[in-house]
Length: 68
Image (cartoon, rainbow, N blue to C red):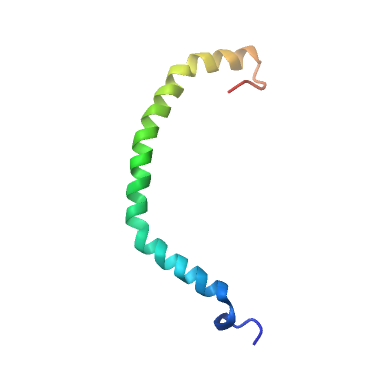
C-alpha cells in the first residue's frame, strides 16, 4: 500500500532518532544542568542588579516600549 509505514523511510529515521535520544538522555541532561547552573546565576544576578533601572524605564515609558 502507498501509505505503508514499512515503505516510509521517515518512520525508520524517527525511530532511530528516538532510540539515540533515549540512549543519550542522561548525558544531555547532565550537559543542560551544567549550562543552566553556570548561566542561571550570572543571568539572575544581572537581572536583579538592573531591576531598579528597568522599573524606572517602565515608569518613564508609562508602561510602553522600553529598551529592555
